[in-house]
Structure formats: structure tokens, C-alpha cells
Image (tube, rainbow, N blue to C red; front, side, top):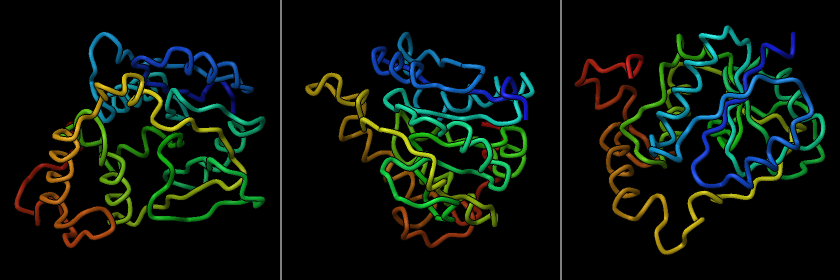
Amino acid sequence: MEASRVALIVPVMTNFRGFTRLMASVDEAVRPFVINNWDTNHGVAKAWNVGIRDAIEQEADVAIICNDDVIFHPGTIARLVEASLDMDLVSVVASDTGQTGILEADFPDFCCFAIDPASFVDKFGWFDEHFYPAYFEDNDMAYRIKLAGGRQGLCLDAQVHHEGSATQYMDRENPVVDSPAFEKNRDYYIGKWGGRPHEETYDAPFRGLTNKTYKDT
């Protein structure tokens, strides 16, 4: 695969120092798509969707979607791209497992993951932008992939350092996602799937009582 066909999608809000460190750790030729969340906070789901659309328009074979508080270990990008050929969604790991290969799992690590953008949207649709500004959009997609019989998991030898919620807590007195927003997203998730993450009871969103497919988000 030509490295120029790999898109690196990074929404950036306030963590510009983290983004600089991220880009300094890139050791493969990629086409970066920086999603501007600093002028207007579009939310995680919409930012990811914008990046995926850009990657599809540019005919990228693989899209790596990454937080701005991640640092790649050497070789991680190449390994992640290779692993994405066999999986619908494959993510990095944030600690040294001492293992190689892919571990299929119902919930990968969405801090950094890889997809074939066009195929992914065709199979599973877009990330649900009703989850705003963040939290539960990843649980939602992971459950949708599971329901559709898709393959997702962790690439055990694609390692990163993940700072963890660096953007969320840049201002600890005014976090990006406050408690009411978190609770609203949680309640929406429960209404959509009949339970919290890993406690879902519906096999269709809202018990199938809506025509919304989330492919037109």
C-alpha cells in the first residue's frame, strides 16, 4: 500500500502542544487532516465524521483517527495500517502487552484507530452526532459494529503513549464535557440501546421505532 494513501485525522481543540508532539512521532508518510475544533467545538463524533469524509474524498485507503494527546511508538503506524487490512476497525494499545497480532474485542481503544473509510461508512454508517460534545459516541459505534457482525479489535503490537483526557482537563474548573452533558449523552445511549454500555438490550436503535439509520448524519 502506498503510504500517501493513508490519512491521519486529528481533531484539535486546545492541546496544540500535544498535537505537535503527536506529529513529531509520526514515522510514516501520511496525509494529515487537522479538524478545527478550536474555533468551534463540533464535538468528537462530528469531527471524526468530517475527517472521514475528507479521507473518502481524497481516496484514502486507510484512515487513522487519533486524539491529539497520543504519541506513536516507532513502527506503530505501519503495523496499524497492516492490521486494518483484516479488520473493520482496529486500534492501538496504550501499554506494552509483550504480544503480537490482533485481539478481537467488542470495545477497541478509540484514542487511536484505523479504518478503511469508504468501506466502514458503507457497512456501519457515520458516528452519531447526537452524542455531544463527547462520550458514548465510541460505545455506540462499537455496539453497532458488533450488531452488524463486523470485526474490531486491538493490534497488540501497535503501541502508543496516551496522555488521557488532556484536552478535557486543560481547564480543570471548566472541563469540555461537564456533568450535565455527560448525563445527557448517557441517557441518550440508554434510550437508544436499552441499557448502558455492555448492558444493551436492543438489537436495533430505539427498538427499531425510528427510520433513522445514522448513515445520513
